[in-house]
Length: 126
Length: 245
Image (cartoon, rainbow over all chains, first blue to last red; front, side, top):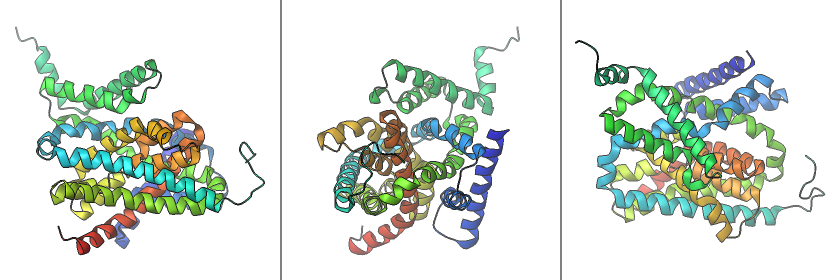
């Protein structure tokens, strides 16, 4: 029952997100707005209910499975990908590598810059 | 004499959602077992193996993607609630996030702009059509978000979904090696980079390295989904104004 309540709540937030996005015409996908609203709710309540925690852990621990049907969609785009495979593969590969390297380095450098001499060190308590 | 052959049964089954859904779960189950057998070698990423198995099966049996998707859509649909579910790890990591909010904000902003800008720029440089450029632009965001953005900026949402998956796999496979080469050892920085560049598939990989890297990757994926939705349409307009295609 807990799991069912949790998944229902996630769907309710997604639905509210979708409706709000359409009513207001904001350029954000519905599930993303739903996520923001759930986050705000959790902040206000001060804790994540067991049901939501269970449902989200279940969904997120098998996140890669959820991408499989979209990945199989490749077969519907073989023609397109074959026609422009050079720009597609090179741009995708290089851009992913550049993004990952740049973001990791920026995060490392900025963390050092802004790291306050906090009492909390590696392995410190929460 | 009128016994239904295997072919007739397949034809009947392939028009019902049961088949698509079942083969998706079975393929993933097998792929995941293989992945564990290889000691979680990133090259044996379960998304790669299960997608390959399914495509081979569908091609061999002459089943169309739309027939398969009758069943596959039930799994695909869960990407929506999974996106909403990201609020939970985000909330749980909030105290860490609050300490690091400035570095995280700067890295996210730069990461999202670099991801979209470099894919549009490189695709244009290499002679990709505008449709391909726009389909590539949101490739680092999680699938439902990327598809929504792709549609808004003139890409092909279903192609974007494929590119998103390939991007995630690329990130998951190369990530840990890349971080070693550039000597980034902090799990927080690695997690943020993984989540920004390779969304959910990268996050699944990050969780295997450490729970801290996973949590930050999930956090970066959630925040960058939001940032991509806000920034990319605007970035596309800006690029159009600077360098008319």
